[in-house]
Image 1: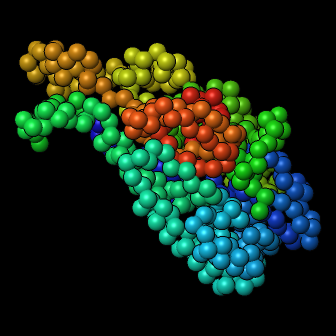
Image 2 (image 1 turned 30 degrees about the vertical axis):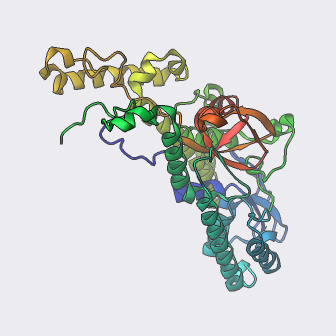
Length: 210
Length: 226
């Protein structure tokens, strides 16, 4: 049907993933006084200068943009921790569990809006890029191990963005394996000897001309 | 990094506690994600959507009052942002459902199980959609074909089934995550000799798996799609 041909309509866009990540909590230090906010997504504040408080990332970024707070980068974003993660990622084929599900989106948002709040921002940035590269490489080599026996794939600690990137490929690959394994499609031996054209159950019955 | 419950890395939380600490927006987000990732239409979240609608309306009124009372523009804009986020989720949720209904309308209309998953408004929409689409197909093409080929449901009168009705493909693969330890999941769609094999799921671990085999678990809320 026209207008509905988009095969990816059920996938999440990068913006949607960012939207979801913006609900993760982060610590801010406000520099203004403001009453507590009773929002649909929860109650936050009250905001008192120099008193740290937890808010969702979207709220933190909104305040930061207006110069009303500084954001405390989460612990996992420290140079120490990231260095350890890079090493762990390089050493093992397993994905590190020390990163949050939305680490790509969160770090990206903080780099874009709160650079001045991140100590050693260049270092942190390049470490995160390294981690991303190592992890993507691992996922890719994992995928090479697929074969006809694969009926489900289990991946520990894969992050949201990584899921989104490998999803179309894994989905099609598994589907293809499934399809080629299905008994209706495996031709019976005597027929093959005949070399008669196979009429296959699921194939389109009638080719439409364009 | 303290992440919210739904995003919890792998901490199994008592159901009651989850219920207390989970906001409706969080629940809507889960419903939205499931609906986006599932190939077929899920049950309409009547109660949840009702509550969210009320909250949005209430918040709109509060924001208006605040604006009239001259509350500082900063907190007002934050209330507005929060409102926008909730509304985005609600709209997106409803739109995905409408997309699915439009796409599979004939199949949904003739399958009672699916039909009952729609809300009242969606049923009205689906009825109008069926009529219009049928009318359109008949006017533009079918009425000009030979008599045997005039059905919108079948290729021709000799078709045994309704083979011209698109329906959701359930044997597609989805990404999912379980909240608890699950065992004994039957993988119906595996290669023939593996069919009897039962599958287990650890909490918090991601799986690419055939939707058909976990459909019931998604519907009962044990598994979330991503």
